[in-house]
Length: 334
Image (cartoon, rainbow, N blue to C red; front, top):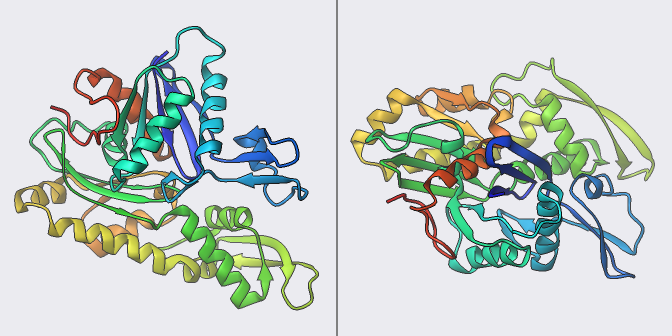
């Protein structure tokens, strides 16, 4: 019953034993302020976003990769663990991932949330280590490998060799920031107010950050800011490009800075091995080609990049005797 949890800002994924990923739901909680009860989590709560009366609030308990609402996070983790394990006498060991720049206080909050949810033992692993494990890369060899994990709240870039993180950078620019940029752009350019769910759908359907040509399109609906009435417009990949390209370039520039802290021998390895892209942001159309052109190193999108971190937490159980229990950052396997 040991499980691995990718506690993401946008989605929570749970991997279990030999079953692989058994849960993939949004990190969202719906709370009834009148009865002081959680009424929905995950997919059920996500469908309520922007559609609730005043007495029901829908919250994302994680922000920029860390816990911002402890109570709601505990409720969410408990609900998800019960969903995959059922009511059982023996509680599981849990490996949870954390952003590479997380503080001791923030990592303690993750451990406490898992303990309250019923975990027997809690182990922490840094996101880029879990991501590259989940991508199927052997990190035990004296060979440099680089991973860029673009999630919902943070982007983690790291170079890993001999089971250890050699250089790393965590950026608070990721999927949610891109969605907000699209909302801002549509508001300024078309005087149309759209929701972040609509912006996310537009990003998935119409983004092309390498060579926009107007061929990818999507119709979005919202409220006109001047007339105050419902309206719909068509967005093309040119619009999405203009909205998010500055943030995408910040991610690429941040990735470049990691090389400055890396020994030249490992830089040579990465030139040979390439950069692995994981997380939902890896699916941004054209990102792999843009990064390869800007950095000069081939970029490859991992198989099923959305679940790489969750798969990596499950694989970490094979090394549990090497992992540290409690509040430590497990960036290195001894």
